[in-house]
Image (cartoon, rainbow, N blue to C red; front, side, top):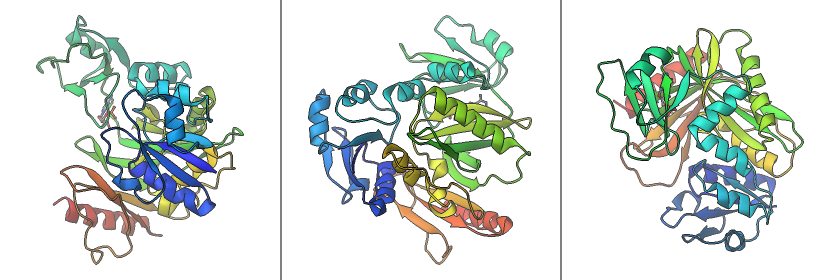
Length: 362
Ligand code: AMP
């Protein structure tokens, strides 16, 4: 089967690497300015031009039998139009819900699932009054094009100078939640409706960017995994979703609130390459290819450490770590690879992660 991937970054790379052993082949759509280095050698790369038709893109991709995307900031009109030529998973509607914070949070709340308290705002909104109502710190987030803390402002209290939100940028305000931990759940839904979820993962960020993950998240309250899976099931079914969907979560007073959804394989699921019986990339590919999902259990504790603008460490420092290098040039803060580690003893694993983080980010 031929799979067309919209995008040519590291997620596309790892999807292809997971699909190749199953005999699947891949082609990649590069934007006019995009660097396709991560997928070089893994299949044909088609560079689209501005305003190109869906039919021409479909032809350029070599007439794939199914189309998917590695990113959520994708032209949903293009996804819809491509559906005339081949099935597109996840569907345009699901991606469009996840692309817009207000739409996404409303959709989550409509399924009876908690988020931080939020309101749409505009230039006339009294942010001080709203901060008192929703709770400080107050987060102002743009509805679109906001990720990893980008296009986001934080008001610590009524005395914080108000942000200058660029003209025409649609935003929401969100009350701060005093989370104990940030978690995520990577879930997959097959075309026959079967759902499989990975163990909850604990995520640690620096400057709004994921730095490392621990999986399964250690010492969780009992029953939390089942609650997270129930949330995922409800969302996946409501979206009639096929493929991998990731729930980014806050753990607050022992309960889960969703921060956001990612309609794709996710950085916090990279540990599954070494730590789960079937990795998230293979399960996404299986789902969209109409194959049954593989088992998602994790035989032993795992961790993932991102390489953010740094070269891989000398293997001598951590010989058991598995390196995934994305074939990108190193620039400050840029995700250029990650390391996966597993160990039967969680305390040893956490010590290795601490040591690695100290070496990489002194
Ligand atoms: P986001 O872009 O929504 O993923 O937010 C980036 C980071 O900001 C999150 O990973 C949290 O650490 C923090 N954050 C965002 N929203 C909230 C909130 N409502 N309460 C507390 N922390 C938040």
